[in-house]
Image 1 (cartoon, helix red, strand yellow):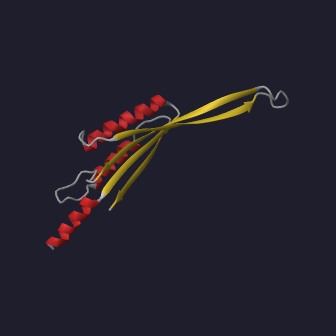
Image 2 (cartoon, rainbow, N blue to C red):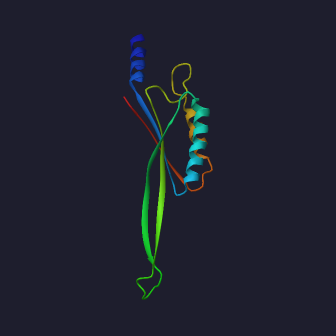
Length: 136
């Protein structure tokens, strides 16, 4: 029985955990505000020593042209651009990202509370995509 628990601890030690939040917004200031709020919640649940990386992604620019007149006057046009700002908050670790109880098991209640806190943030015009993965 002792060798079985030792084997379980070896497997847990070899695991890599990844947590990525991808943010997209048309407004740069709303995006920065959302990242700041997420950082505060992350530090509250996982501690300040467990830092998260902020990775800026390139801006996506899309342009489109609209004719001003519905019939003739094809030379009369208006051009618009749409810029999407993106950032990724990333955390990779070989240890558990979550709180552990005394038996070294993952406490999923804390994890659910963390995701609920992220979900209930009021962010206008910001899209969040969450990706959590692990590898043995």
